[in-house]
Amino acid sequence: SQQGEEDPQALSIQEGENATMNCSYKTSINNLQWYRQNSGRGLVHLILIRSNEREKHSGRLRVTLDTSKKSSSLLITASRAADTASYFCATARPSAAGNKLTFGGGTRVLVKP
Amino acid sequence: NAGVTQTPKFQVLKTGQSMTLQCAQDMNHEYMSWYRQDPGMGLRLIHYSVGAGITDQGEVPNGYNVSRSTTEDFPLRLLSAAPSQTSVYFCASSLPGRTEAFFGQGTRLTVV
View (cartoon, each protein chain N blue to C red):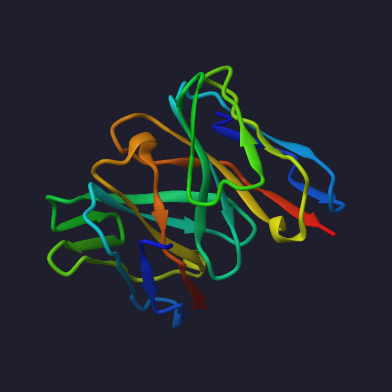
């Protein structure tokens, strides 16, 4: 079963707008990660937030984590056409050996020029 | 930097055939994993390894075998392909300590 559920499933915005997507999970975690997948390609790691962190920034990305609500959000500011991709959250549990990740279903983002 | 390399990129199999998906990484990562990606399902873990000689099952291991004889290589074997195994397969590697995972470009497998 999937640990993470993402919302919305799809998002269409104009270039320059912000894109926000949410991830909910079910069990306790060690960290939560966000990945991007361009069409037909592998996943690329964007950002990792640990369970004791509440917010993290990386360039135009901002991630928040609320462990009490078991949820996270990814904000992409000033979006560009190149941000068009699917975005996945993935959780790592505290006791999981091998850095096993559990993925959500993803949010497909379309940035229109 | 090669990173994680998967071969082949595309494969069509007939039901009942067997094959091996190759995965190699040159980052000296101890941890390696295989995932499958189906439409609307995200990625699901098939098998993983925490080091040479050590493997374990993930969420959806049935119909697949793995072995890890070296740190660099982690092949995935389909024993008798079924249409339900039509999917995109991704190999990933990482260092211990629950850090980011590095993914290969994927193998798109179709079983007819």
